[in-house]
Length: 101
Image 1 (cartoon, rainbow, N blue to C red):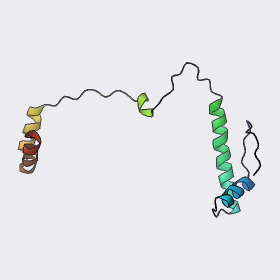
Image 2: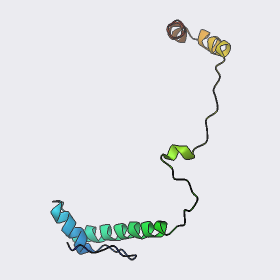
Image 3: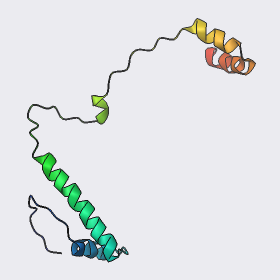
Image 4: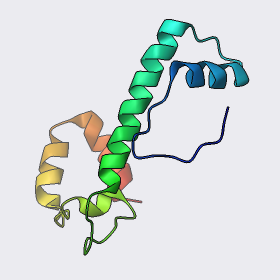
């Protein structure tokens, strides 16, 4: 496979897919190679589009969870928990272990 610099129009050919599949010892037929080439070309075009987006002033995320809403503090109402547990003998046994550790 020839080493060519990436261009803004990055299309992957069926031949490139077949060559990589051969090197990786994967059995890929020509119709599947055509499909893979089309899919990979679409992904590369999307990456090219995303690389052209102006992200000046946007703080990068280290983790997607940083973009989520903050969780509110949870307060336990032990009276209502005890009331609910007392209505089930099986839960009452489990609660005794939990509350008396």
